[in-house]
Length: 182
Image 1 (tube, one colour):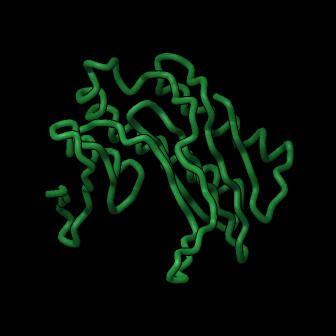
Image 2 (cartoon, rainbow, N blue to C red; image 1 turned 180 degrees about the vertical axis):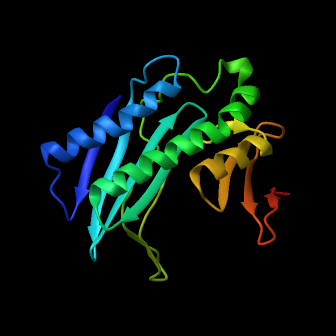
């Protein structure tokens, strides 16, 4: 894996970089072939909280976890444990779903899943982050799996059944909803 490690309000020391690479590198045991693309790691310190965010883009799947604690090394351990739980939890479902494509055990995607920039609309409403990503065709079930793995409450995707942009979301009652254009 190639690591893209950056610090916000923190200098990424060689010891910290080595620790991140060692811990996140443990995830390689879950894949048939060694991953060969970037792993995006953001280390952040705010108000005595040490946040770690890890994003691993893969074809048709993105693994992402974020954790926070009072110690940076503890936060790194927690985020790796969270990623391992995600992989173990969804591996069977994903392997079953993607059986025709090989499985989850494929090489990582090379391109970055997002880019950020600050914008302000004509109405003066500040947009603090813009994400751009490819909408890969999938069905609603796959989109729900992606949303759960990312830990988000909604997920935008291209519906493979009708080739239109759809949104799945988690309802307050714990069930899922689907938004389709007319």
